[in-house]
Length: 387
Image (tube, rainbow, N blue to C red; front, side):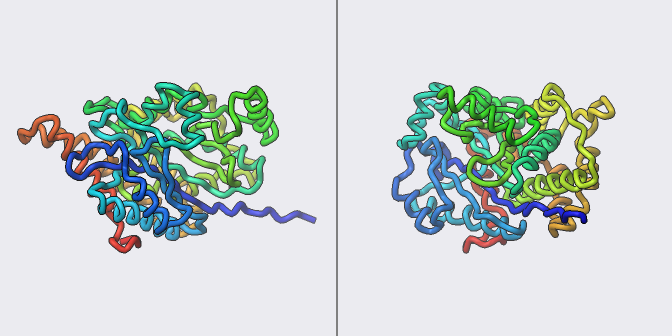
């Protein structure tokens, strides 16, 4: 008698980190008022938190069954933070770096965990004026979570390319669409994880570090993707934060559909061809450096392929899964991101247009901040519901 295969829940949850800016100066706010965070938390209990630096604030949706639910929750959280911040002359920006702020004056949050991080990591921790987006997908079986992590690594550079929002650092175009990853790489235990044969093997490797006193638990593994240490989820962490709400939803939809596609293949005893990190990280670098503009390597063909062709392939591979989740429109919307460019593209264009119009560099950068403030709220209504 055949045993029925139980499909993972594929629930989803999104976490976003924002930078807080002064509406007058457009610079980062080093020390936001304590009661601002408290007011946010009163409006959304358990969903808004401090981050490592005081100039940051983090939000997280509850566990969502549908993409529409996740979008509404994220819209409400963006609206809550923006509404409260506005009372203090501040605004959140959904960008992975600030166009011109300096990291040296920033202060970390006075909490035990953050104090320990500052002590252990030293100067690289003080440079963490960067923000990201994390997407959790519910996969209850431990070994399946590891198996899908091994396989979906191949697609992570493709998702990064769609999300880039950090071209500037301290007033300079860093000639990278995601400079955030360059800053992040100064920390240990980052980057693409190695493949593991089982959840047991993963646990045994984590135990070596824990028993040696290097880390307290697996939450100190800051890989591009990891089994969450708190939830039965596979947490994707490679992406920049998307400035536009709908772009964030599209990236989350693609990640969710890719995982279900790989699960369907597994039911037929088919596995996505594994590739060593040597190859995957080359695409990771290309996505970080060029974003959507110069293609990624198709390892099967052994050549660089335009991103548009790769995106068509992903949409085709996940068509059944998008139908299953009712998110075909959100997945297809990735083509719109490709056509108009990511936040990184728009930031650079606004900066260059301002310079061409006679603005000085400082003014051009302030105009980028103004655009980020406005774009962060596109698709978010004043009452906190999706527009």
